[in-house]
Length: 262
Figure 1 (cartoon, rainbow, N blue to C red):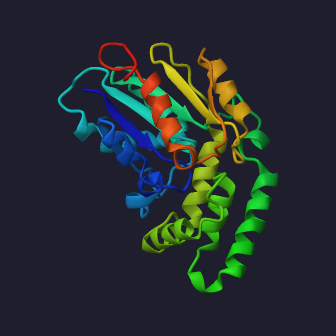
Figure 2: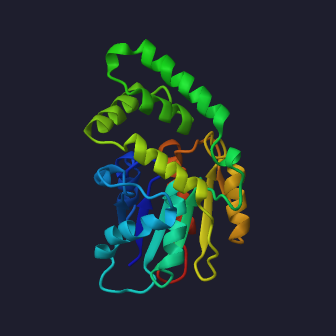
């Protein structure tokens, strides 16, 4: 049976799938979530400064779910930095991984830094986050989480209930500033590896403010495929367009018989 492994991005953890994993399970998929070192359940660990160095920790979380050996039974689905980690894992474990799905990801050998991490939209998001914080002083909103949603979501930047929920999660445990910087360094250095035997599916959001969609187009070209563009959604594609993303995954993920899941 195929196992879908979900990997979140920079300074995020499994909680930030925000119900999308439950949608996948309800649709009949076998899904597990993992956290990167320094994030979520592993917030106390030090984040490596190279993407390849995340592989041992992530694979250690996956392995108990896929033993005994069932061949190429794993599909890696990675958002942003999670996509980079998925590519590194596929390069290291080609005999266990059937497919990689990249969501709004990028690589330093394919795209310039200013497309991979867009600064002007970041500045606008920071201003928007400050505005929300000042106008909602009694709401217990985290400035960081307000800025994150302003930056990564096309629809939820002003969603006070969601910002409050993510702020509560932040209070319960979050990525340290030091680990956040180390993760940024790892992302900045990441080089997309050649993958000769593993198909790569590239999905991107048309309205991504963080990573220019041309980064996904470059990845698609590198892996000899076509980028699948979802309209009217931002970087956090599973938050903005969960139904469209679910349909795209089911249409493009290869099952045990070599066909799409649905």
